[in-house]
Image (cartoon, rainbow, N blue to C red; front, side, top):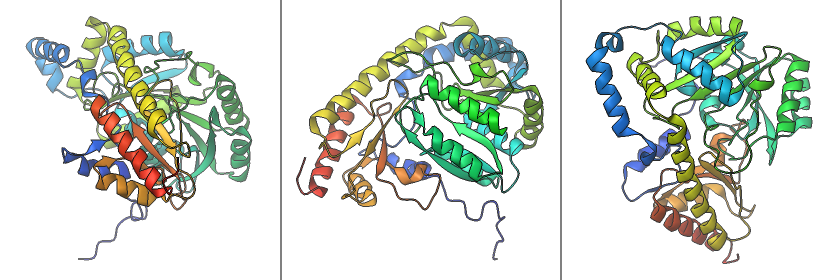
Length: 399
């Protein structure tokens, strides 16, 4: 039978990162490609204890349907945390629990964009968000990303050139894939551009808890006095990625429609894991736990940067993140990215090519993403040295 795939999905491609994951089952592979948190960051023993208590005392509640908006005790705890940590105001906003930050992104686009509408995004940007926008029939227009965030002049030009722009997507803190953070000055400018042109900002902040150096920068949502910002966060990087517990704080009117859209998708997010997250927040010191994760990533990122500094030819540029999980490396024009990525995989080192993160899927890239979170210290050193040797070979032996 010849299947007639919907117009929305017939041209969609599998996530390059998810496809790379299939190769990571080989134990020889050094996984610089994954976006997974470090295994040692999971508080497994504590979660096991809390899980046992939940099933001993509240088994029926954990196994029953819940409400679409989310488990009420978790929502209340999250409202308090977001207000104190990230300046997210309760008044005029509704907090919703979603099935991972990915669902929050997809639902926001579904609610705000018709087919053919435009989403403005940093270029490069998170592949999961790009595919969510594309699957909803939105067209993604990229704005060049500089060391301190979007190029504001290019942002203005992109909005003016696209009258159907509805949504402005940004990862301002420890950007995926670039690893940089948008300056406070540019966050204010981004907000003003959105206000001027009537855009909704989707602020994606899954890495905001993971700063290990530098000064905290206020969220864009903390600046929101006009109901412009939908704020998306997640427990994936601080408790467990597999729980798939994310959250949105959205203006009340937008949140009400997101609830309707979510009822169509999954009715409600996993009730047991919501209760487990709430129990952790109530009974444990999550800030002490996060401090341990920050220390871990600070050490591992320093090791990766030190090994890069000592081995990687100077023709390769790379970011120096102050938090999060990623480094963004850029090859010189004389080295073909596809050949580099393939050579790395043949030597059992997996990286993600920058083309996967392009807003324009047909555009070229000279960059690739590395993570220091998942690999062991030994793998970080070995893998970086292998990548450095490949660069030297493809650059004629020159440093």
